[in-house]
Image 1 (tube, rainbow, N blue to C red):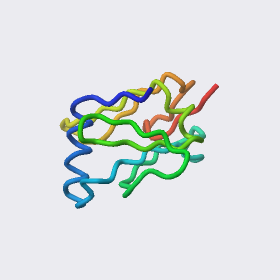
Image 2: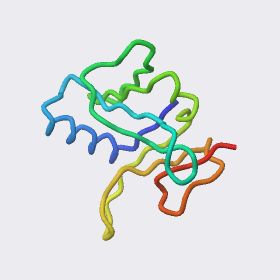
Image 3: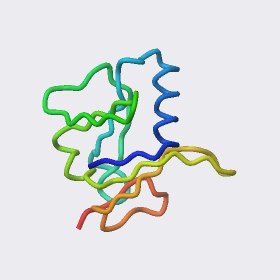
Image 4: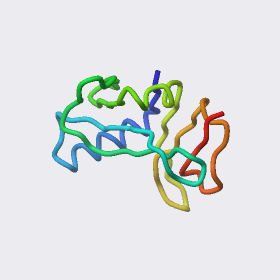
Length: 108
């Protein structure tokens, strides 16, 4: 199961409202790339695609494709704002390691 904090849910809702996609959802994917082998990718999508797992967090929907699902199971997504900036932070129990910048991870 994918877990979103209240802060992440609020940030996603603001993104969706700002994009005029109140009926859509946020797609979270894992793709090959980055320093460590895999990287997270996020984007707004109008609707789930065939084979997607759809998570509901109140008014917010999150779409995860079947390929990314095993790598995102148990992941905790937060939205953090601090002096260095703001952004989504992934805590992934499936990651064996991550790069220094925190933007990619490896699985062991």
